[in-house]
Length: 146
Ligand SMILES: [Fe+2]
Ligand SMILES: [Fe+2]
Image 1 (cartoon, helix red, strand yellow):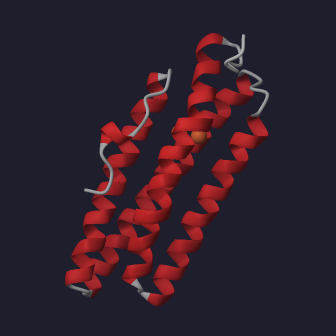
Image 2 (cartoon, protein in one colour; image 1 turned 45 degrees about the vertical axis):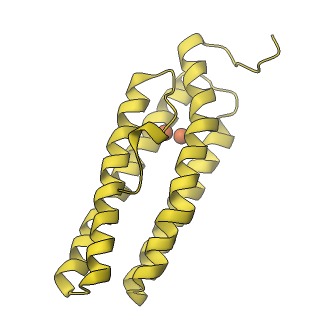
């Protein structure tokens, strides 16, 4: 297992926590498939990774859009900053995927998931999503000094 649900900070909006838990399940399944391919680099195992990666990508598009729609509805002031992180994250997911499909370099994919994606996701939830959820909840920016 790559990520534990208990590694994820809970934010003040249940709909966001639920999506984050789904994300963890999808990523853990993907990681298992990566480990399987590492042991047995068959065409079948290669295709299984690709199918799961595409499921994950589609889920992430929805995950990010769900937050973005609500930020826009509520006129969240730092919307462009949060949206910018989403766009960068998606761009990187796609870049890694294209690279993997071309090279079949399983180590590159494994290192991305362990060293880049996991810390990115936890950090994103700890910062952007936490501030955003608390704004959704109270209608105000929490800056800690008031
Ligand atoms: Fe999120
Ligand atoms: Fe987010």
